[in-house]
Image (cartoon, rainbow, N blue to C red):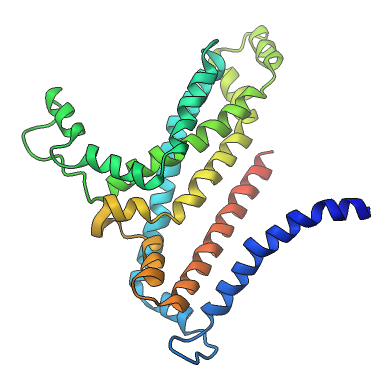
Length: 273
């Protein structure tokens, strides 16, 4: 037992230093008033809940994260299913192609989408060549739509990988048994494959929805004033306005939303199991 404690101690120490201690520091500053010699107060939290702008931005952030999660799921599940069920060779190459974007800076990817989505950019040229749009500008830049497109591109690989791993674990004997009982492909998918892959779906939704709540790079670069979310508010408080105490309070509220979201998704996963 003592040996296990000693083996675990480095991990516990790192967890305390880099996770727990900063969290308590954030909570401490969130209850301090601004200015020198700050005193204990809950005014920072009251300012957040009393001003409609912050509540609207929070709701906007949650909706945007929900859209990103749903779109990522609609793209990722068919892709993962094809990789597992249809493609016999080259799976490793496809997985590598999905993972490669992780090696690129998130800021670089955001600016790449700016070049694609701007008026007169590559996407507008291609759509005009295909006669899918008129002569007017594309009008995607500095909108919430541009932010959602970039966020889907950045986060959907998490969804693909988790669903792929879940589908890989589905016992092929169950699928064959379903076919031997004269069940059609749709019935087999609905009764066998989909229920067994739900843990991967839930995990993928968590891995996409949770980080989407805290993004600020893509909204800043691609959204302009239309892309303002709660993450950009926190960034401004820490790096532009220097309202660290209010920024800490908003950060803690966002953390509470994240924990609540994870609890809801985890509870849903348990109920489905």
